Amino acid sequence: MKVLPLVAVVYCVGVLMILAGAPQGPWNDGQTFWMNWGAAVLLAIVSTNLIVTALRKVPENYRFSVVAVLVMIGFAGWTFRGEISQTVMNVVVQQSPLAAVADAAPSAALPRRWDGHFRAPAFINGGSIEMLVDTGASVVLLRHKDALGAGIDMEKLKFDVPILTANGKSFVASITLPEVNIGGVIVKNVDAAVAQPDQLHASLLGMSYLSEIEEVIIRKDSLILRN
Image 1 (tube, helix red, strand yellow):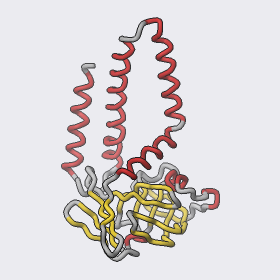
Image 2: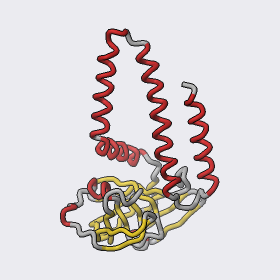
Image 3: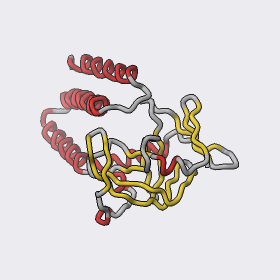
Image 4: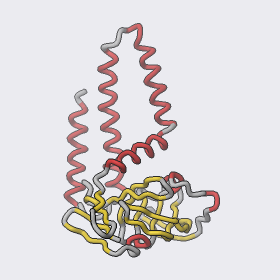
């Protein structure tokens, strides 16, 4: 497919411009859109190219059946995209290079990710949530779907606390998390909040957790948490 190399070059140039422009700062909506949906479009083009190439090798009598199976798989994937996304994230969190340091005090080392930010795989209510470390957030702030994944009863929440986000004014629901565990660094009874659906790009690990541990240290490209 002749358009594929051009799309790939344009996307990669855009990524390099984003990383070079503000590697340590928070992304705006345009940058996030480019990184996420640009990758999705590129993946869709590559997948389509591979599928079309493979179908050409399938005998003509079987092509309709193969296409029907692919459509059903695609429909099932879209229908259960939330569950699939959560499962993939759980696997990634379990395999992520989070280091529990052998020390007298529980410690965890978070590597700086490719986008310049630190992300922490947090275990809440037995579920794993990838959280963006944000010292500018006063409390731990959960995305709506992450709160669902953590087993929080959404029917009891009242979204009556106003906050300002990149998308403008919004309302969140205050909660208390029994425990937040990051690589063995545990804080109990953590003040937190739950955002409304589609109001937050990522869950935030705020100061209601960070201020309760003994040390938060940045060493080169690692963020050290120690209790």
